[in-house]
Picture 1 (cartoon, rainbow, N blue to C red):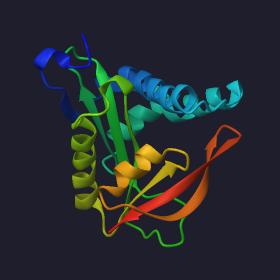
Picture 2: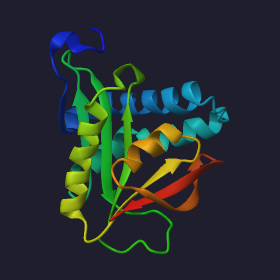
Picture 3: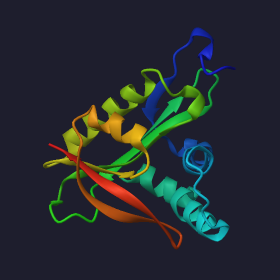
Picture 4: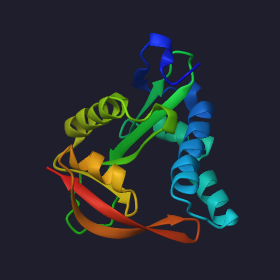
Length: 182
Protein backbone atom coordinates (compact mmCIF):
# COMPACT_ATOMS: atom_id res chain seq x y z
CA UNK A 1 0.00 0.00 0.00
CA UNK A 2 1.34 3.43 -0.86
CA UNK A 3 1.07 6.50 1.31
CA UNK A 4 -1.71 7.68 -0.96
CA UNK A 5 -3.94 5.02 0.57
CA UNK A 6 -5.21 4.03 -2.91
CA UNK A 7 -7.96 6.64 -2.74
CA UNK A 8 -9.15 5.85 0.78
CA UNK A 9 -8.70 8.28 3.65
CA UNK A 10 -6.81 7.49 6.87
CA UNK A 11 -8.95 7.67 10.02
CA UNK A 12 -8.12 9.64 13.19
CA UNK A 13 -9.42 8.00 16.36
CA UNK A 14 -8.66 7.67 20.05
CA UNK A 15 -6.10 4.99 20.81
CA UNK A 16 -7.32 1.74 22.34
CA UNK A 17 -5.49 -0.72 24.58
CA UNK A 18 -5.36 -3.07 21.60
CA UNK A 19 -3.26 -0.44 19.77
CA UNK A 20 -0.46 -0.46 22.36
CA UNK A 21 2.02 -2.80 20.58
CA UNK A 22 1.59 -1.02 17.22
CA UNK A 23 1.63 2.40 18.90
CA UNK A 24 4.87 1.59 20.73
CA UNK A 25 6.45 0.53 17.43
CA UNK A 26 5.15 3.69 15.70
CA UNK A 27 6.51 5.94 18.44
CA UNK A 28 9.96 4.34 18.19
CA UNK A 29 9.87 4.51 14.38
CA UNK A 30 8.84 8.17 14.20
CA UNK A 31 11.37 9.18 16.87
CA UNK A 32 14.18 7.48 14.95
CA UNK A 33 12.96 8.73 11.58
CA UNK A 34 12.72 12.31 12.84
CA UNK A 35 15.77 12.74 15.03
CA UNK A 36 18.29 10.08 14.00
CA UNK A 37 17.58 9.67 10.28
CA UNK A 38 16.15 13.14 9.63
CA UNK A 39 18.31 15.42 11.78
CA UNK A 40 21.27 13.10 12.16
CA UNK A 41 21.42 13.25 15.95
CA UNK A 42 23.86 10.60 17.11
CA UNK A 43 22.40 9.67 20.48
CA UNK A 44 24.65 7.35 22.46
CA UNK A 45 23.07 3.88 22.05
CA UNK A 46 22.57 3.42 25.80
CA UNK A 47 20.80 6.80 26.10
CA UNK A 48 18.53 6.03 23.17
CA UNK A 49 17.71 2.60 24.60
CA UNK A 50 16.85 4.05 28.02
CA UNK A 51 14.71 6.79 26.50
CA UNK A 52 12.80 4.46 24.19
CA UNK A 53 12.18 1.90 26.95
CA UNK A 54 10.94 4.53 29.40
CA UNK A 55 8.97 6.67 26.96
CA UNK A 56 7.58 4.11 24.52
CA UNK A 57 7.25 1.05 26.73
CA UNK A 58 3.96 -0.82 26.47
CA UNK A 59 3.15 -0.55 30.20
CA UNK A 60 3.56 3.22 30.07
CA UNK A 61 1.44 3.54 26.92
CA UNK A 62 -1.28 1.34 28.43
CA UNK A 63 -1.32 3.58 31.51
CA UNK A 64 -1.53 6.76 29.42
CA UNK A 65 -4.40 5.39 27.33
CA UNK A 66 -6.30 4.40 30.49
CA UNK A 67 -5.74 7.80 32.18
CA UNK A 68 -8.74 10.12 31.61
CA UNK A 69 -6.45 13.11 32.13
CA UNK A 70 -4.60 12.18 28.95
CA UNK A 71 -5.71 11.60 25.38
CA UNK A 72 -3.86 9.74 22.65
CA UNK A 73 -5.04 9.72 19.05
CA UNK A 74 -3.79 7.46 16.32
CA UNK A 75 -4.13 7.79 12.59
CA UNK A 76 -4.94 4.50 10.96
CA UNK A 77 -4.11 4.03 7.28
CA UNK A 78 -6.65 2.32 5.02
CA UNK A 79 -4.62 -0.91 5.32
CA UNK A 80 -4.93 -0.80 9.14
CA UNK A 81 -1.37 0.31 9.90
CA UNK A 82 -0.85 3.16 12.36
CA UNK A 83 0.91 6.06 10.62
CA UNK A 84 0.69 9.00 13.06
CA UNK A 85 -0.24 9.85 16.61
CA UNK A 86 -0.70 12.70 19.06
CA UNK A 87 -0.65 12.64 22.86
CA UNK A 88 -1.81 15.38 25.24
CA UNK A 89 -2.40 15.81 28.95
CA UNK A 90 -1.67 18.05 31.94
CA UNK A 91 1.17 20.50 31.34
CA UNK A 92 4.43 19.42 32.97
CA UNK A 93 6.82 21.80 31.21
CA UNK A 94 9.36 23.61 33.41
CA UNK A 95 8.07 27.15 32.96
CA UNK A 96 7.23 29.63 35.73
CA UNK A 97 3.94 30.63 34.09
CA UNK A 98 2.44 27.13 33.84
CA UNK A 99 -0.70 26.94 35.99
CA UNK A 100 -2.62 23.96 37.32
CA UNK A 101 -5.21 22.80 34.84
CA UNK A 102 -3.33 23.86 31.71
CA UNK A 103 -2.66 21.30 29.01
CA UNK A 104 0.33 20.22 26.98
CA UNK A 105 0.73 18.54 23.62
CA UNK A 106 3.41 16.00 24.49
CA UNK A 107 3.87 14.50 21.06
CA UNK A 108 2.58 14.75 17.50
CA UNK A 109 4.43 12.59 14.99
CA UNK A 110 3.72 11.15 11.56
CA UNK A 111 5.66 8.75 9.37
CA UNK A 112 7.58 10.76 6.77
CA UNK A 113 5.83 9.09 3.83
CA UNK A 114 2.51 10.57 4.96
CA UNK A 115 3.66 14.15 5.62
CA UNK A 116 2.80 17.09 3.42
CA UNK A 117 -0.97 16.74 3.19
CA UNK A 118 -3.79 17.85 5.43
CA UNK A 119 -3.47 14.91 7.81
CA UNK A 120 -1.09 16.64 10.24
CA UNK A 121 -3.38 19.64 10.43
CA UNK A 122 -6.40 17.44 11.09
CA UNK A 123 -4.57 15.57 13.86
CA UNK A 124 -3.42 18.85 15.42
CA UNK A 125 -6.96 20.25 15.31
CA UNK A 126 -8.26 17.11 17.04
CA UNK A 127 -5.64 17.44 19.78
CA UNK A 128 -6.23 21.18 20.21
CA UNK A 129 -9.98 20.65 20.51
CA UNK A 130 -9.41 18.22 23.35
CA UNK A 131 -6.80 20.47 24.99
CA UNK A 132 -9.11 23.50 24.88
CA UNK A 133 -11.96 21.47 26.36
CA UNK A 134 -9.79 20.09 29.17
CA UNK A 135 -7.70 23.16 29.98
CA UNK A 136 -8.36 25.87 32.52
CA UNK A 137 -6.11 28.22 30.61
CA UNK A 138 -3.43 28.01 28.00
CA UNK A 139 -2.05 25.22 25.86
CA UNK A 140 1.67 24.39 25.86
CA UNK A 141 4.18 22.24 24.01
CA UNK A 142 7.89 21.64 23.73
CA UNK A 143 9.68 21.40 20.38
CA UNK A 144 13.30 20.62 19.55
CA UNK A 145 15.15 23.84 18.82
CA UNK A 146 16.50 22.47 15.53
CA UNK A 147 13.12 21.41 14.12
CA UNK A 148 12.17 24.55 12.23
CA UNK A 149 9.50 22.74 10.20
CA UNK A 150 7.64 21.79 13.39
CA UNK A 151 8.08 25.29 14.80
CA UNK A 152 6.47 26.80 11.68
CA UNK A 153 3.66 24.24 11.88
CA UNK A 154 2.88 25.11 15.51
CA UNK A 155 3.08 28.86 14.80
CA UNK A 156 0.22 28.43 12.31
CA UNK A 157 -1.92 27.37 15.27
CA UNK A 158 -0.99 30.41 17.35
CA UNK A 159 1.85 28.97 19.43
CA UNK A 160 4.64 31.38 20.38
CA UNK A 161 8.04 30.73 21.94
CA UNK A 162 8.11 31.66 25.63
CA UNK A 163 11.08 29.72 26.98
CA UNK A 164 13.67 26.97 26.72
CA UNK A 165 14.57 23.78 28.54
CA UNK A 166 16.69 20.67 28.20
CA UNK A 167 14.84 17.50 27.22
CA UNK A 168 16.40 14.27 28.49
CA UNK A 169 17.12 11.41 26.12
CA UNK A 170 18.80 9.13 28.64
CA UNK A 171 21.74 11.20 29.89
CA UNK A 172 21.85 13.19 26.63
CA UNK A 173 20.10 16.58 26.59
CA UNK A 174 18.30 18.15 23.63
CA UNK A 175 17.76 21.92 23.69
CA UNK A 176 14.01 22.51 23.39
CA UNK A 177 11.81 25.56 22.97
CA UNK A 178 8.69 25.99 25.09
CA UNK A 179 5.72 27.22 23.07
CA UNK A 180 2.41 28.53 24.39
CA UNK A 181 -0.90 29.67 22.99
CA UNK A 182 -3.84 31.33 24.64
